[in-house]
Image 1: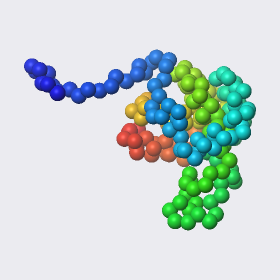
Image 2 (image 1 turned 90 degrees about the vertical axis):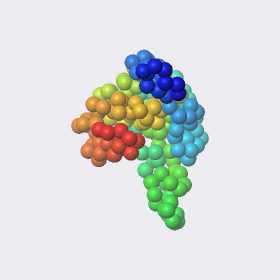
Image 3 (image 1 turned 120 degrees about the horizontal axis):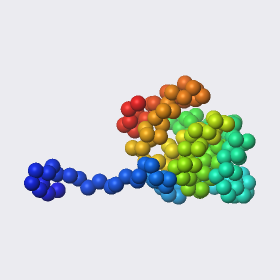
Image 4 (image 1 turned 135 degrees about the vertical axis):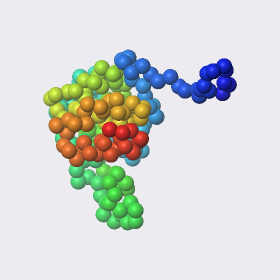
Length: 183
């Protein structure tokens, strides 16, 4: 870079999206939502996603579905993954190996992604008071779609949330520190 006069050399940087506009930036892959390929394949081939969720067209319909149908925020339905017989580094490791029945939560998370949420809608999810699962899917949406540099701005103020179990709070703090953010 040229040093003109007393100006310090600068590097070209991309201008971040306005943080207070209603349009959310999208970080990463605009088709996969940055989901694990096995999870995405299972979501897209799920009868629940292809039939029931296809019928839902609005943000409010999806939020209602989360309220009535989500009972956990894990990627696989409980007891549907078979890890027996796996050996080596993949044997029994969470998220590695064969899939199972993809969870309702992850189907709904991807459905939210297809709606291209606005900032206002996403704020509505993470501040929702009717269900911790609505809030959890909001935070998961942030984790998978928002620029890493913006994560602390989104999560700030929620890390001491009393509705979130302490183990999840510790996991958020550990995750944020692994991407270079300090809490």
